[in-house]
Image 1 (cartoon, one colour):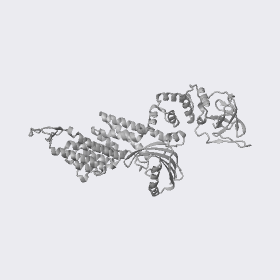
Image 2 (cartoon, one colour):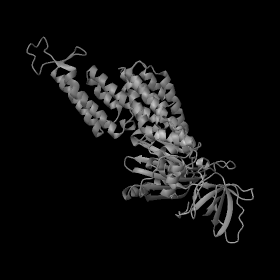
Image 3 (cartoon, one colour):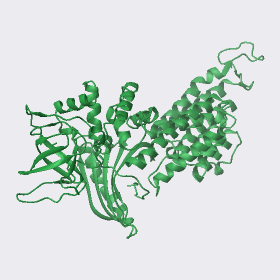
Image 4 (cartoon, helix red, strand yellow):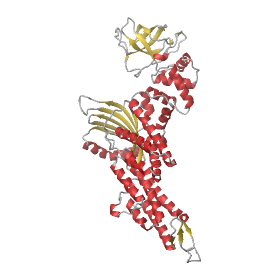
Length: 554
């Protein structure tokens, strides 16, 4: 409604709001009369006018200074002088058949309360919000919809009713599971990337179980690099000595981010601290004095270590920790070479923690998106299928495995929910592992139009949101028409925008190498963080994601 004019004269009629389902925005098809013009209204067009009078079946409107009479579909209580929008549902009759369009954003509190009463609901802030959101989403104010929403509002008081309506609007069943999953997609800690990372951590812990290694290898299947690393780590943990030239010389930084390298160094320091607990100072029978500088006895191997060996062990572990932190020890083989002088029990523990840490890094490379995929959706579909296979093959006799399987189930539930959103609302979460950072990405496809006549002439516009460690939150609007590209970056502040501008030539050159025609690449400072859900999904601007190839490596 364009405006609201309060008047003392009411035109009574009964409410019949169930049929007011609209699919477009209120003004998309609006049509007005010019002076002296006889309109030729078509079905589906929208008439904007002022109420002059209304009965149960007829209505008189003033449209751009001209008076017109029409018939009403359904019954509604209008206010004389009120500005309204009505849809033409039948233009073939002598009088047009019109159906009211409800514009929740421009509705007065009085009108909203009237509707709540007409629906037989108690006038309360909760019920007014419920009705407003349903109307704003152009959904029927039916008894079933109202009852379901009221029930879910009671069961999920922490969830905004707009999110529940968002599910209904996109054809996703309003269930407890779907409501919980939608809430998780908007909570940074519960986003898909973080949940996959937690799942990997739990899976790696199952290496200590009988079939744990098999589960990891099954998850890595189809990724040659990850399979090779896991096989190498398996051999390393078994204790089989390998020729240094055959060892894995990859840099630790290619698997672990800086924080994880620090964590690895901390674990080595913990080994150093725990060493006195691993061994018991015990008097050698040949040394009846049993002094502090006497031999050290290992309860695990039954071996004695001389004071000199004890000091050497502690020195090696200290040097190893410092070397990893300072970057002097950069590869796995460097660590293994230094560990040769350590007693077997320490070598075993060191190899186990190295295997766990590096297995996590290898699995991330195989599971997460890296920006090089031609079809990220297909990658996630394969991952979903693979997680199902791992879950089916698991032996749940171990608590470690049971715990890991719960994380797999949680990740699959999230991915299954994302698939529904992908198909119905054009929204998808993208779990990236770029460089050594895990990134939560959100993709909102605003337009995805395929030109069947001209191959490759697809038209795509999308918003990609990523949270970087150094750049912070970055919004990237992309418009692609065939090979023509326009990209707008929205940074958090001037410093980050300046950094983007300085690096923009790299993106420009990379896109030219791929034969893109660059129309424009712009950088801006955003005034506020774009909320993809509120600004796009809730406003019907997002379109279904079909398979498309767009290089996000820039």
